[in-house]
Image (cartoon, rainbow, N blue to C red; front, side, top):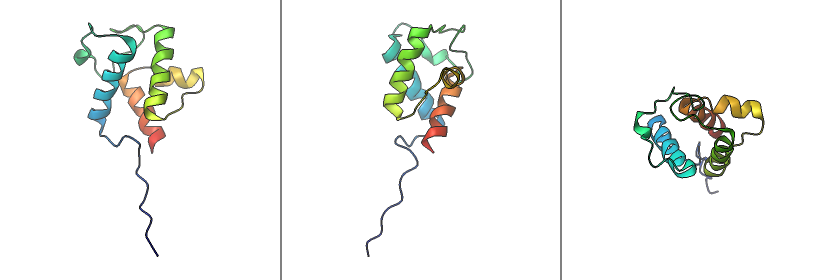
Length: 99
């Protein structure tokens, strides 16, 4: 009888630093931030009211892109508010749903 391989833990197996880097790249692409230096954006920097100061339309665009890219689901405004606090909370959300 043939053995069936165990499923991988994530569609995108990557470490935390790689995930943060990918999130920064997606933000540049999705939000057209080519002139913004995301290298200075730390994991704990607020996405609203901080250096980026995202608005609600940008947040929606980002959520839709993340759902498509990572296969996650951010269904409610509470989930969105929690996930979009910072790059770190975005990474936590993706890692939490991937496992």
